[in-house]
Image (cartoon, rainbow, N blue to C red):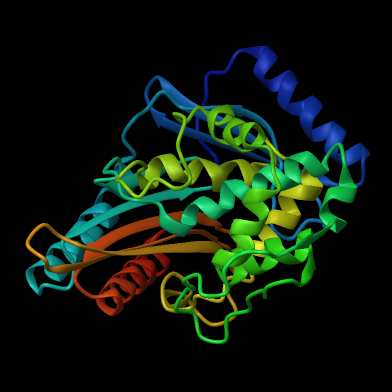
Length: 336
């Protein structure tokens, strides 16, 4: 149990609740982390999490009393460093737009740089497809073993990931294997087959249940921000939308992400990252080329897991990947 030594003025029932939460975890053979933090003279946070050895990727949220504080002064220096790095990249012509959202997952503190700016989600929207299938599997586990036959177009555009796994015309595939290809390799054919075999209402519910406005998965416009998209990862880590088992399974798939040039390239080898990238190429009105490349994920830094979502726009996908990598490295090295 982690409790910083600070003076708190809590009502007695807060303490009773924390004792009960801790006791339940102890009685079940598991243990509870209780994070107490004072953010200002009259603002504090209480976060209780269940830590269970059977889970590698989730940290189930048992109780949360969020702070009323909107600014976390401790992150100001890091926020300024990230903003400075972005300005240098823009001045060098490497990027035109960058938005960043960082969140300390265990303590709930966060900062952002233009975190509410909207971008086209591209393949990031494969995450709600995965979540929708796992949600259905909570009541019908056999859905994950169902065999689906691909009858689409073999010439459909694929991602640029080397050694990608895809599917082929006329062949049958297990639903869970399609989900793995869709998430780990961002396979568009697998995604299209999964989309064709799910009730669209179930898919829309995943988005609206999290408080996001109704969004179309085929929308190529700027419709979502890094801060808004982070909700998908937060609910998986907290196991507050899917149950604990399927939240763990979802993050396990995300940890197999084959795109290694972004968030993963900025952290030490061996540090796990459960993430997803999305990219989009288009032409501006002046016929110039433009790319959007995004990556969002959970970095399992030892004793300090955090969520990082970076969305970028520029002329070359290579420099966008380098920007995500450099932001990832800066935050890993400096966040505490």
